[in-house]
Length: 410
Image 1: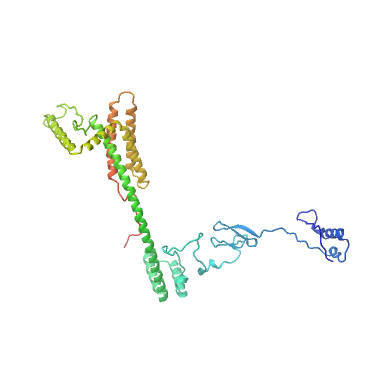
Image 2: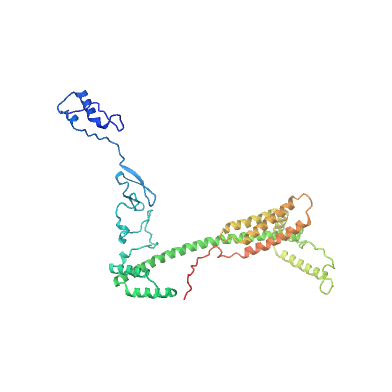
């Protein structure tokens, strides 16, 4: 008789019905729906097998112990799988050992270079590693292994002559375990191949180095220009302090402010006054300077005079310009090309700007010591700025690395 339940009853795990009373429970349900039928006693005389589906997952996410990358594998392989990123086997016992033997751990020809990221073949990049099984025959490979073992177990007769004895012993092993002709030819060909690849790589590096040098030279020229601009700003402030209210570019009075001096203050070694000689030298200088101004175009002289008047009326702006150019030159030079003299020049420029600021906003009359301090600091800043501009070297930032030898050449 064929049975079919119109209203099936699903028994889930964790219900109140005990597993041991399931046959009796099913027998009661069948009798209540369909009544007694032949063969129904089988349910009560034999145990009933009930499969309860737990809905186990088909796949699970696992984490590689070597590269820490997540991978989705079948649920049954959660403790025996190969990572697709690093190609390492993940399957461990409770004590931490592998749960299966791995031949690649003790067989060299089963190993190869593995990278976690997708790599593309670069013809300029040399091969970093090659197995001796590829280049050498079995006999030569065994000879190389024996040679390495004997070198590792070498013990000198005298500890003080270790280097000499090991060189002699190494030469003896090279003569004893020579490569056969095919292996020697293969090794020489591979060395030539490596040389060609390294030569191409070195040429590419040389071109990149030239581009870097060009960029460095451009930046270096900008730094030198800014340092000279800072020096010219400081020299202009020194000239303003020397000339005072005079105008050196005026054709009528192109002389410095007269310096008051008495005949007794300036004397030569014989005790006679040198005031007349000083006056003659000053008149000759004035005449030469006026002739030079007459040789220049009139428009240029007018522009120079206007620039002089503008700088004299805005000395604070000139000091700020000098400090800004000094700091900008330090910024463009970078940390590698930064020098102590640049830091010292920036400090002097800050002091000069502070003195001009104090002179500008001082309500009372300017004391004499302030003019002396301003002139001395500006003169020192001018000297330091000139030294910083002239002492700029091209090879300061591009220091090439030279490997040091551990032992002197014999």
